[in-house]
Length: 150
Image (cartoon, rainbow, N blue to C red):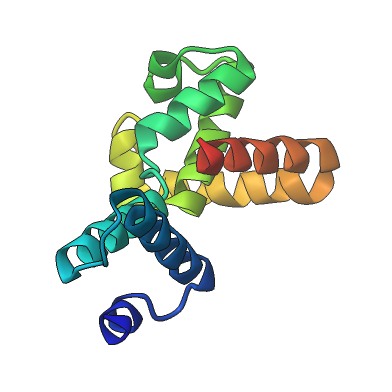
């Protein structure tokens, strides 16, 4: 059984410790020795608990909308170009690029079918904003942290 556990949990000591503790507790509660099936169940639980929730464009837009006091629909909109909404949209695009593996084209599609060159320009603009204004950088970093921690 030790070899089986070692073959399944190779790089994370916390997962290994959690597996051993959970097996020990289960063994004491049920007053029986661990079996391969009980080990498989425990490992599955441990591995599934450590998987962070998927970061989606929807989650990103919702968090940015909440932070900037606008609606998700306004961020996705092609028509609304007011400064506050446009700024929130730019931040959402930047965060989407940071937290997902979507291509520039796919990000453009998510934000009202914008051309990929618009996405590139937006990313550059937000990076300049972050370089020039520490408060903007902190807000964006906090937004990213909130999305990852949720």
